[in-house]
Length: 411
Image (cartoon, rainbow, N blue to C red; front, side):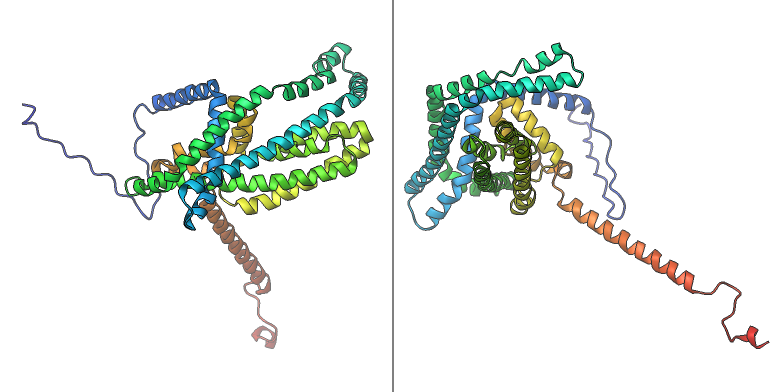
């Protein structure tokens, strides 16, 4: 009986109307359930990543570094250098970069740790004056005490001492990171061949992977170079102004350059505080002006022109991603927020052609800008036409009137 049942032919998909707007079909059944399942899976994945935050952050940081230095390998192999030598060269470049940065950061923290006790009485007096000023604004003494009670300048000394004293934890983290770098650098030698083998069968996936690596590399390399320039300029400016710990604040400015939108404000607070201790309000204003000019020129003028459309994330999504990854992974999550968000977009959107419609909402605005430019040009032409029509209407005589010297004048 089942074998004799006539097979139903699948219904043909409705033809698209090239002249009219596209009409979507009926909504998929159980769409709400699918959305809830997706949100639940995202929540479970977020809690899982947070549970292994240290391992995940180290692995992803090693992956980002491997992606950034991969062009060194390809350039060496193109010139006939053996793959083993190219791998060792890549590792040496990364290790020297990390070692130099770590040594500079350690020295700056050590110098500031010895400098901080000299300014501890001034910090305590500044906190007391702040409490008096708040009470003058009408805030009660209990509220002022609750506001300022959590800030103890003496804890800063303990913090920097703990950082310097936790050498064992730093060494273990460095060993894990170095091991991951060695393994990823060795495995990256096969990446080009694997992608070439996969491209005929999964071209969209390969394109998404290549786009992810190119975007991450361009963003990280440009941000590192501009952040280093920003840190050096800030360090020199703070040193000339006599701000204590100028080297540390320059390093902080470099690190915060990887945190979009809010990194500037994080890097600005410590120089303002110590500028107030050393020179009062004039020095505070000078620090704000210097940081504002340097940050505005580098991050608002130079960086967008160099990075271009490599990131393609909206400002709102960028800010939310910084907050989200900072909660999930801690401070390293805020620094790696853009590469992490690009990875999620690559896995969910770029590798799925059915979700290409959502790309403009995420920040890929190339086609949107072209449409807006065309609309602006059309509106400009329409305004020009209305203006010309109004001018010609004012110049033309009213109906029923005759020109001078016409038949009416001759009668």
